[in-house]
Length: 327
Image 1: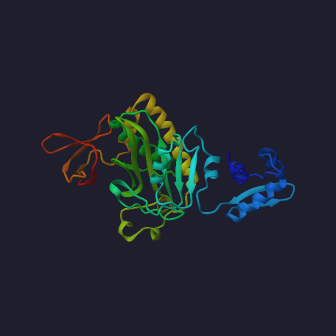
Image 2: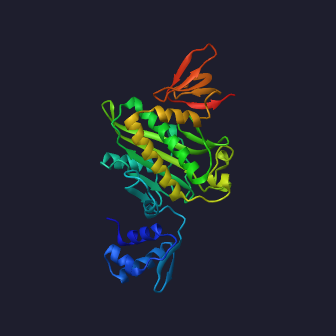
Image 3: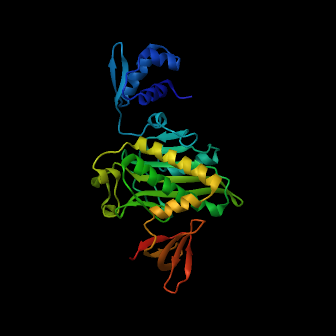
């Protein structure tokens, strides 16, 4: 059960343009009006700007520069995804925390969020720059009954869901770079990291990490990635509500996830190829063992494996690799 302060904040978020009387709040929550007043003062200390007018009540006018679980929950349109949120202003890695929670039995749909990661990471152990108050750094716990060979499809499903959510919330049309990156105009905007906990040949839990550059400015980016990364604010010229974006990502992911479990990978494969920036281009794929394959990207197969056609017309199945464009 959320605290009295959390429930008051959720009520304010759910009625952003109208006043809510102290009596309405006390009746809904089951506490005294004095208790409501005390919690309003506590919220103001936390950085929330709340307008108070006698005989009218309270209205939220501004929020601090951090992601609030209450703000996310107030506008969340899902049944499971994001309904249980584990939030801290700063943590080493949402992915590491989600792994521990999954091992301890956290339910499917548990979302781990932080305003800052001090040890954020991407694929192959690479560092992921996660400055405070600027991006979306989160990990979602799934518990699908899938064989291990199907887990990569969840990465592609997540990419499609995020592209659609970005379009809905911001109007930006992005592209997907196989297997786990989302780009805009040739620069990286989102990274996805999918990891699993397995028993025998079946996934016990899948943890999908998402790192998204939302309100970073050029000054927030390290010099070594300024030419290859971007953010929503840098693209649109204005800040974006991180809570609204998280809400729509959860909505899109839950919808695609249920469709995928019931009807398979077909629709997601079609949508992924529509958004893909690889298809029809000459690319070089380098895997972790140093093997290199160069060829024409033909698409992905029904397992989500990238298909490359070399100069001799042979088709190579690329399961995991870094991709470079050659034409």
